[in-house]
Length: 277
Figure 1 (cartoon, helix red, strand yellow):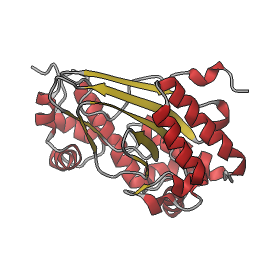
Figure 2 (cartoon, helix red, strand yellow; figure 1 turned 30 degrees about the vertical axis):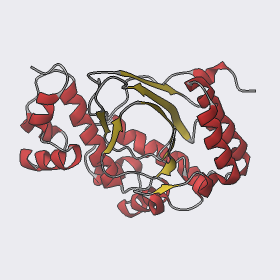
Figure 3 (cartoon, helix red, strand yellow; figure 1 turned 120 degrees about the vertical axis):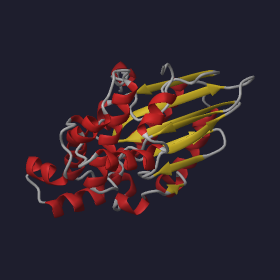
Figure 4 (cartoon, one colour; figure 1 turned 180 degrees about the horizontal axis):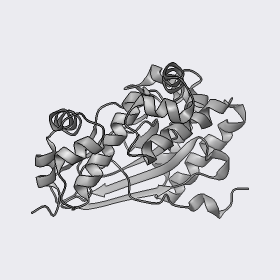
């Protein structure tokens, strides 16, 4: 029996959201941790709801994470492999999106093949979960609130759990990605290899199989998450020092990569943040 601990909420604010607060309309973002039996495979469940009726549509953008998501909306559904570009969603009318965010190594046991095969790809839920996936989509749309959807997600995954072959490298992949996310000073694959005791080639194979992206890509994405977080913090930031802290050789290189991923240079992004002077 699953206890009340499954209703725990992840700590901290969601990372990588480029516009933390919408200017108009109603918007909610709820998250819930999985039960203990799924904790190695699932990072959390998330539920977003919006009501823009009477207001102009607004665009919500997020930076990519090294995670697979199973997402259901009122008219679309899909399993999204690791997405290498920023994600853009136009919020209009009234709607919801419900997702399972798998841990970096956590979806491979469900897929049964290297996660690199589905990078920048969307699969229908039944491609992995069969008829259970079809029923799950119907269940999510029939639910009337976030808590009911959280419970439906747990039922789907717990029913599949006994059939999974969860290799020890799943936990290793999770730990390596967590180490990258936690250590803003880790800016090279060489540093990760030294800390982990693995060769660069072994890291590459492990990440391609279980994460779906290279270790270099994961490091660069998390350093960009850190850049956005520092710009959002409301504290004066010197871009040259920020670039150096994040492992860039010069400010120009940092600005080019920031612009390519975020869609605008850091100075312009900073000026457009809510509450910016």
